[in-house]
Length: 372
Image (cartoon, rainbow, N blue to C red):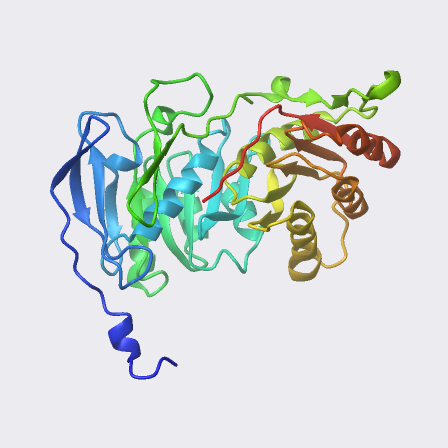
């Protein structure tokens, strides 16, 4: 306890004074609304959108406000979840907690959105408690019914059926997810996904503690399809070039593409394990890469699945794998394909380890750090 400071006082909401308009980099921004709070309840916040520009989240429609509307954390989790599902051509869902996915999944075959959501949630059912759920299809009644079986804080979708809206509203009235916030957005097709697409001149803005700014190009990948993934190879001295000897299966290729697009939106260092179109373990935010992988494997074994093998799973690493320890740990857990940027001076040794252990490796040729 903090001496002399009551809990009520410390967590009371403070009203801020935010302008109705401001200009940044030649763009005019208008205030949409004051938010419930910022990152924490004692921080005031407001939400703005760019004037005259096509936006997806910026033109959201709040269909159900919960207790008192959206917070900064709600919007940030929605944004991060949409950054994942926008890459999926098939129905997909991301379940987000604290800017990291507790689970994500995309449809296989004719799978329903309800089952896709269930698989995304059950990747880490414990962490999914109080989550933000994003889908890339209009939400149907069956998926809404599944969402209402557990505690969810926010749902964001490009449209809702009448049945879905009735379920989300009536369920809240009965006490389940009473404070649920329901957000409708426009078609995700307006969001840029790939390098070279869309207009230039848009920047990510980071504000440092002294008020100075860093402008950076947004993270957009060049990996559009499985055809952009390269079988790993490396040059060695004295003609000792090496290439991967095991090719991934068609299913592993699809999982590798999905895993890469998820890993782009996991806090680095990120190690994402995917099997049959769904994450099964997510290691995030570790200072060392092997630590992130060990975290993911241990979480899978101890917290959720017991001693079961990850046989046939795919591992995505957002940065290059510098040593064979990651390959050995992944293979020991059952991983059969690894996708990573490549480019380490130790690529030769890492590929050799894959060949020794019967693991396929794919290079993307780009790094995907999410340093947030």
